[in-house]
Image (tube, rainbow, N blue to C red):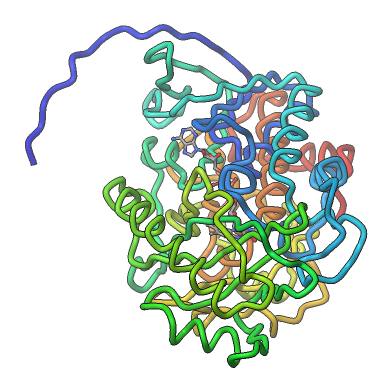
Length: 437
Ligand SMILES: Cc1cc2nc3c(=O)[nH]c(=O)nc-3n(C[C@H](O)[C@H](O)[C@H](O)COP(=O)(O)OP(=O)(O)OC[C@H]3O[C@@H](n4cnc5c(N)ncnc54)[C@H](O)[C@@H]3O)c2cc1C
């Protein structure tokens, strides 16, 4: 590869804060609120024009699992869709708070951030880190105003892919431990013109619903070319509009721009095939048409950082209550999509996952090896490929974020490193914020 030298230059330090949150998805939102509630001056940097990450820009259908938490519960209640009277099984109910009204959700997140005096820098890409030896000092960002530096006492990487931690030199495992393979990527989309009174809503791969011409998953398997071939349809908050999770591209590294760009094209080209299939085979969808596609592609899995603790599937199955819990009441199944094609991976467990207890996340799983002043939050924390498929659910990421925000705040107040022993004060603050086991 050919290289050129970028000339060294001075860039302005435009902002300084106590806690810098990189990325404004569910984890970044939780982190900002957690730190701000603990009295910190917080800045969130987000490359998109809206807060929410995959939940909003990614056009996500619903908050999966059965996780609880004070910030999460407040958000879901305040962002409850204003129109829906169906749940994601298509049953008539009163406005489920788990189905996402994207506009209302992003506005509610913004309102809550504003209420806690959190500053958000939109349209801002984090492109590098500022290091003093192995101690992270801040981020270098690019936006309309040019290149600039933002400094902070503590930094939380909630970019999903762990872009900041990676630039800072924190070690990680890319994808599955055995071969670096990662879950497929999907462009979420919505169709309109659906007759809700007859529509089917298969929400899991195992939901092989009977339709006039056969069983819906079998029909899709025969109709589409690999790696497409499953049907996942979810009611939205507006009658007649359905959120569709059916485009599918495998073999993509979500941290590689060539891969992301290539998959964006492939996924976009699959959209019309999906609509043709739905019109032909799915009752209620005969007149459906494309309403919109997500403004960011859905990358399920990339970097798993090596942290002071690595969460395993057994920790989740046993619903461990860690001594240093920072997120609690987490619940989801092991949602590993087929790494080579459509449907569920043979190690994934959706409908048949039965667990009554909710699990916790330890503080150690947010602390990366080798880099100081940095915490991870969201889907890139220390966990195995299998465990990640569970804690990647948005509600769990949000709870992890709140925990990370509190850790950063308390470490600042106690003037300690993030990996030092200040956990008792973290627990006290979490409890005062309403987090309970
Ligand atoms: C197709 C798909 C379907 C899914 N379905 C569900 C579902 O139904 N229910 C559910 O609960 N979960 C679902 N998930 C999982 C869930 O969406 C993610 O695991 C979760 O959103 C991760 O949260 P996060 O905050 O860690 O990351 P994200 O939601 O990805 O947020 C990261 C944020 O950081 C920003 N960012 C990233 N890099 C930079 C940078 N360099 N500079 C500035 N900003 C940056 C991004 O713009 C984004 O806003 C799904 C995921 C995918 C991909």
